[in-house]
Every structure is written in structure tokens, then in C-alpha cells.
Length: 433
Image 1 (tube, rainbow, N blue to C red):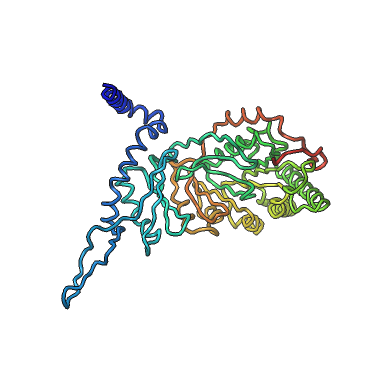
Image 2: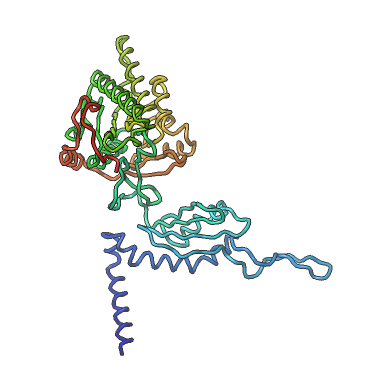
């Protein structure tokens, strides 16, 4: 009797889940995936694996496909080929991961050619392949397109100078990590998502113990949203020149401090001497390099030199640059090209000219350059991102409205240190703990 009741309860639960599945998938996709999508896909992976690998020529027989019959060598298809060993499908946010052990003689490229077939057989949005150990590959199945409407999972623990600003095409969080890539270049045409990315970056940096500075040469129309959280905001080229000169002086002061205590960087300073990291956001960098008259030449030269010094020396001294612009090309002068070489992090949204995409990604990977030029007008927020690992990925920023950015700036305005003269302020303890 008890067994019958349990079976009836189980059947009723399954029926209820099937009835509410469409609404659950539409309104709570992650809940739907955990309750229904993942179990069904995991079963499908197991059931189709042998037939799929056999049809694709990935299964290998234990015996060779030829035999000696008298004086003749007979060749044929081997019986009962053995597929590569499949691990248990593991649940992940919006997808599943499964590990495959390759047969001797197989390489990841053999399975790479089967990715599209796996996608159709498992009825998922996409399957990504990676390999982190010799003899094994990892297959990641995505239930839906993570770039369609990025939802970043809540982070229980945050590290200084590392923020989540969106999702990658494989469903993982898209990071901007200044400790890994100290300086970033962000390019994109109007309404491509560049401003949204900067808003997401500032919103995530606002609660951290970081000094934020802004240079906005679009007449002060973009970065004033965050002015409450900024220690200083320059809206003209003359103001930008003075601000960059002060930051260079701050860099020199930190160099002297590190030398006095025998530290190679500010990260090695004792707790009582810790200095706040600084993030400088430059919007419309092309305006810093344009020269209309001869009198502009000296000012542009000073700005170019100071930006280059900050990019070369800042990483070890806790000073980081985010250089953004709609149009960034080699025609702006050798200063821009030299600066680009110091910007390890690259983010390229849809651009209006091939020269800007070339400046952002051309020196890293030709495939990344081609992918960036295929981004359409409808894909706002989608970008090609690359950093120090030498790989590139498609990504999309989370949508941060101007009002959300303004509220975050006001909420954490108390964390903005006074300017000028950061290097003469009282040292802050425990900044990097």
C-alpha cells in the first residue's frame, strides 16, 4: 500500500511539473533547467552516445578491421566498436558538463568536428569543447543562448579589482580583472554597448576600496552619471592634461615609497603603508590626440607621454587604465599605437570602420578580428573580448540603466577619496586583504 502511495505521489509530481513546464521555462529558466531540462538532457546524452560516436567514426573496435582467411586478408567493418568513455553529466548553471576520455590516437580535433552533430542529438543550443588534460576533453552543453539576456549569478565573495560585467558565450561569467590584465581597451560605435559596459564596470567597482577617476571629452555627457563616486572628473583636454600630470606624480611618489621599503610593487607593501588602487576611465580617447592648431601639439604630446607612462608603470603601482572610444585608429599617431601595446585587455563591440577593429584585435588574433566585424546592429552589448590568456570569446554586458549607475555612485560616494594629492593622504590599512 505504501509503495502504491509513493508511486502515485511521484506520478502526480511529474504531471504537475509537465503542466507548469512551459511557464516555468519562460519565467524561471534556471529553475526549469534544474528540475526538468537537465535530467532529460542527461538521459539523452547517455542514450545517444554509442550510436552517435559509431556513426561519426569516433568509436574504435578492440580488434582490427581485417583478418587472415587462408591466404587472403579480409577487410571489413569491425563489430561492436567501443565509444570513447563518457563521464557522468554534471549540472551547471544553464547547461551541463561531461568529461570524455579519448581512445589512443584520438585528439580533441576529432571530437571538434562532431560538435554540431552533438548539438542536434542532445537538442541543446550549443556544445563547446575544451581540453585541460592530455587524453581528455570537456564537453559543455548550453541549454539556451546565454548572450540573449545575460543574468549574472550572485557573487558570494568578491575580490578587489575583479568585477563581473556580463556573460561569455559559454555561459561563464565575464570578468574584468585588473590584477590579471592591468589595462583595458574598449572600442565600439554609437549604440553598440560600450557605454553600458562602462556603466556596469563602475557600478561593480563602486563598493570596492578603489579610487575612480574619469576623463570624459564628450562634453561631460557620459561619466557625470558617476561623478558622486569619482575622485575627479576632467571634461576638457586642458583638465585632462592636468589630471594625468597629477597621476604621474602619484605614480612617482608610489615608486619612491616602494623603493624606500624594498618592495617591488604596492601589493608587497606592509599593511600600514597600503595605497588605494586607482582606476582611470578615459572616454573618447581620440579627442585627446586630435590637433586643430600648432598650439595643440605640445598639449597632445604631454598627454600622450603621461598616458604611456601610466600604462607602463601603473600595473605594479596600483594604477589602472580603461581606454574607451568610438574611433581608435593608427591615424591618431604613434602615441596611440604605443599605448595600445600596453593594454592587455581588449573589448571590441560593433565598430563603424575596420581600422578600429584592427587596432583592438588585429595584433592578437585574425579570427577574433573577423568575428568582431560580423557583429550586427541588432546585437547591442555583444563584443569580442580577449585578455592575457591569448584566447578570444564572444560576450555580452549586463544591462545597467543610467539610473542604476547613478544610484550606485551616490550610495558609495563616501568611498571616493579626496583629490588632489592622494599621495599625501593618510595611508589606508587592509586595503588588499
